[in-house]
Amino acid sequence: MSKRSNSSEQKKAAVAADTALLALYRQFAEVTAPVWWFADEHIADTPLPAAQQNWQCFSNRCDTAQQLRAAGYHTELNDFDVSVSSVLPQTVCYRVSKEKAVVHYLINQALAALASGGHLILAGHKNDGLHNYAKKAAALVGATADIKKQDGGAYIATICKCSEPSALLPDNDYTSLQQIAQAPLLYSKPGVFGWQKQDRGSALLIEQLPQFLAAYNERPARMADLGCGYGYISIMAAQQLPDASWLLTDNNATALLAAEKNCDVHGLNAELQLADCAEGLHGPVDVVLCNPPFHQGFAVAGSLTDRFLAAAHRLLRRQGRALFVVNQFIPLERKALALFSASEVLIEHDGFKVVCLQK
Image (cartoon, rainbow, N blue to C red; front, side, top):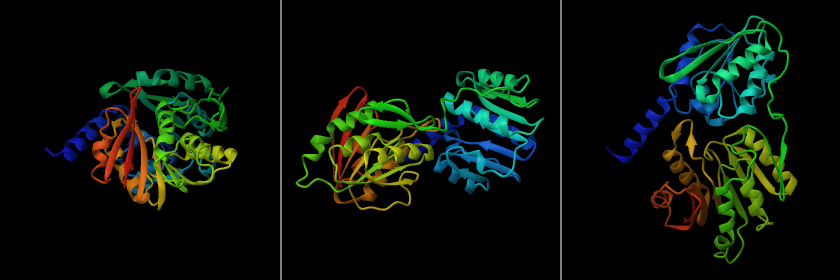
């Protein structure tokens, strides 16, 4: 079997393991419209049920939104802003997310919007906190959660809205950008990967930046940050490159809200673009900095690393260079040689490695 075929089979197997999502899909044929569907990275590359009338999907990820739209679903791509909908739901469907604050926020939105007698359908596993989420949501609207076990250890919880919510689940002030660091001043919010921390891998990349820049006779003028998150790499690198212009891109609309705030606070000359692995964006740039995501949905995303490498190569000018940080077990330096003329590991530390690539 070829490496590509093997990778494809592994990805399919990993995605199929999300039995909670499959259990949710089996509910779709029987729900009452109008329907809202909150969709996040869990649906990555999974076959979707046929689109139906009077359904509205909400996602903060452009790859997820693109997948839903391609399947015929009306989809809003934003920071889960349900106020843009002119139709209130009779049913809300949601495979619970990984982050508690996001789950609480979306449950609050669902319970507020549902008509009396409407239903919130939650899917997940025990270790997702499904039972706890369902029971807390039901208590807010004077109901009892109907929780049923499904195949593969998944659960479906159905909550009927018997009354208006008596309170809100704590959501870490989801809609607000929040200060997470003082030196340098940084803002982030729930819904952004690692939103309350400074990523160890990204910090390791920044530590190698002086060595990386020492190879330049003139400081690079145009920089790109692929998978920028809330903008940590750009903000830190700009301290060494105060005159550079920046392209920051991420597939998460929530992340770009935080990145835009941080660029404004620190006065970066920055263009921010919502794109999946920089799809549709154009260079040339002198340097690409990248801490690519390790997972997509439930799959360990080897092919996602390939996509980020291809995007970096496409954006770079001739003789341009890239600096990547990845988990140590990802063979990025070997993968990169299919596109780049040179690849060098600058450091391996604390489970990460920083790799310099030459176009």
